[in-house]
Image (cartoon, rainbow, N blue to C red; front, side, top):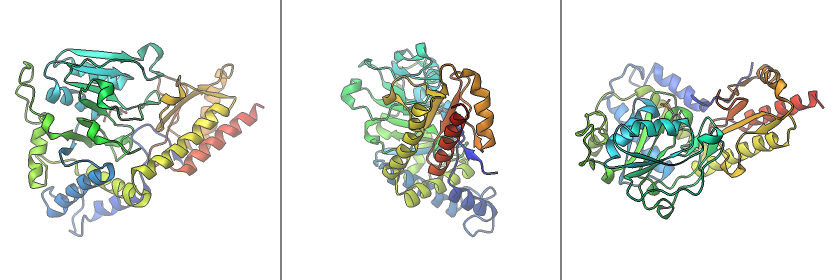
Length: 371
Ligand SMILES: *Cc1c(COP(=O)(O)O)cnc(C)c1O
């Protein structure tokens, strides 16, 4: 049966990336040895690392003063690593979901944290507005896409909007979905498994000059070697940046996924157009269909990646029925997160327009049953 994958993460990946990975697992780079068995110091692998980093630079237009690191531990480990490297006196966080809340919790281990605003009062169904970033914060942390609630900050804040405080962003679930002005950020991080690869590799894009400035802090100072970003960046002058064994397999899939994004799609500006088209198609149906309603309060806060909806008022008793109806038609991973309920469809980069059309038809057919 045809299955349409709308899972929130790990995500659907381009078929081309899966196929070429299968081949590399059998024989990597004509070495006669499989990808999972090669030494990470073989020239072919060092080249793959460099190409992967170059693909990031090309696709997101990342300036030379930024390092690009591929680490283990997931975005959740970065919740600790970011403050470990950057929090000297104080940090500011915008609390737009549980991921943001978890990130702030880790930062509190390292120093005072100011939550500039939170939308927890309404199950994070909106992006707070009208907040003020304290000018004395070492950095201001945002979560650009709130995977669980379907809200997104789809712009790069100007320095003047955030009191000239350094901007740090968890972009786990919308990285590479649109062009980003990297120069406006001190650091961007995320798990690969939402839009650029499988689980097992975490990306960090960090401006080199912001590191090594935790002189005043007591806790975890000096930094343990593996926690210090400079450990992983230091070797980059030699173009390898592998302090220890990197997650070879996930990085390879990321390499193939980015090649697809750059060459087949044509880059992030093109990807953004396709994503908007897919997203509009689904939101139009959520808004039109009398059986359903969207959960995000303001339309301008709606995520282009994760789409959340519930049964319309008076139709709540049909929820389980729609779930079964959709499942029968091959829709996979549309159950909403337990904190929001209802449904969530994640339309990441590799999700096809055909899949979205199938979901929309399914919603229309369900409505017809009750008209
Ligand atoms: C999934 C997700 C995380 C957690 O990522 P892991 O790699 O599983 O640790 C963090 N932030 C956001 C926005 C996410 O969507």
